[in-house]
Image 1 (cartoon, rainbow, N blue to C red):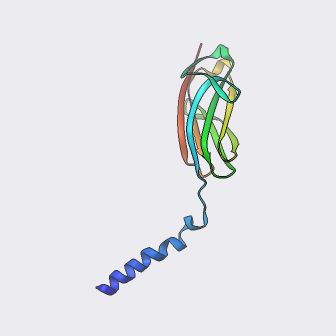
Image 2: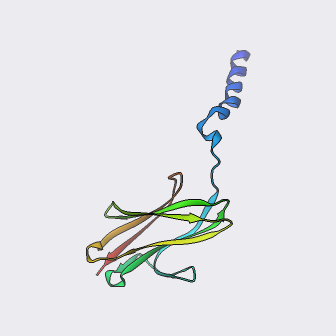
Image 3: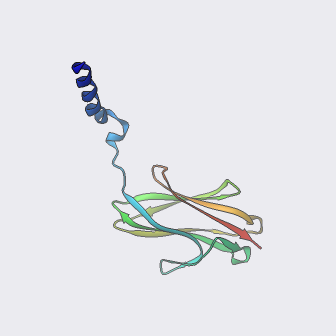
Length: 134
């Protein structure tokens, strides 16, 4: 019985050495704030909201990261009615970084939207939901 317990403990110690994750260094980023807004000025979101008029012509997804350990990539994936509209690649620089993406609004863009913010490993960091109206 002791032999079986010893083998089991040995297996638990050795297994991480052969796992797929052992060669990967996870990038340490912390999304501290994200919002959908009407504009971004001086690296600050202006007029954050969840309902936007089509007449505004454009909406922005603003993301602020207060901890970025190394240069890395994130994505803003814009969806309208659960269909992907666009995927925007954004690069973050250490030690902290704010970034944004935007879309131009057209008459056919009315309805529910969401932006998924993901990291380079496809980990979902946040989902922002909003609507475009008249």
